[in-house]
Length: 175
Image 1: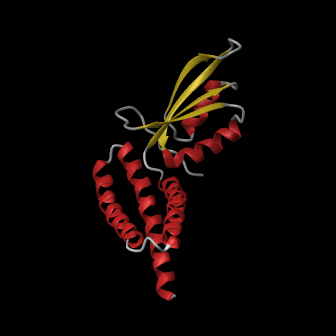
Image 2 (image 1 turned 90 degrees about the vertical axis):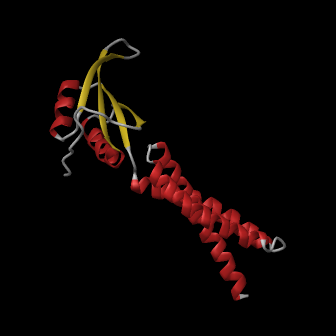
């Protein structure tokens, strides 16, 4: 009985590790960091073969298959959580504000963000200010918090950015 429980736990946690590593590997691939992705893929494949072999060696044990599926689902949750914590890469945040765009632009620059501003026009035809801010993904919550304090009605979109070349990059002030 102890061996059955240990096998089920091994399958479950191996599958969590396999799927989590797969999620992280894909993130690194899409961010252009193929060497890190290759190293992760190496360990991912070894774990996968180990977990699958435990299931395939005893197909009559339905609980092995069931736990394998549970591990897969849990691995997606764990992988997503890890990805949020490491927050690899950069994003471009576009902010369209109804408040004085120049003062918001100055405020964000005072906070250490690199900002590019452009006039824009919305549905009503009124002129607004569109601000473009490049930042590390880890800094997104900081900027969103500052925006919520300064202009909670701002329209904000966030785009993943693969590479940044030239220009000013943010040096935010952590307060």
